Image 1: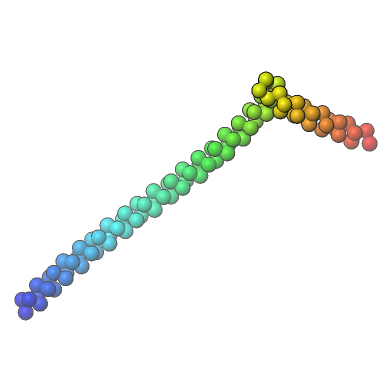
Image 2: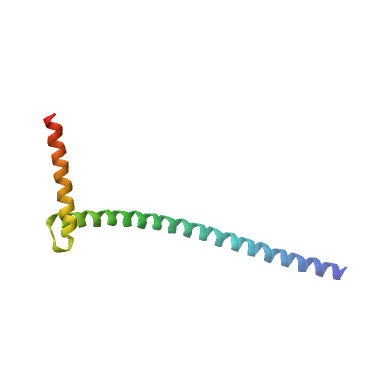
Length: 96
């Protein structure tokens, strides 16, 4: 009977260790899920910030083009022509 008791004790110890590992892994899993959620929120905020900065950049680029900088002469001319066409269209609409 002592051999059977030793086997049972050994099995009980191994089972306790397994339960301990399971609990540890579950805690680690929860921690990782929380970290993943936080990372997803950070990524979303950064994506929104990038989009806002892109919009701001395009606005500044357009303003710079309208100011007539040397670098953007072609863009400036195109924008002025576009504005003139819009004004002409509005005048034509008002004339009708």
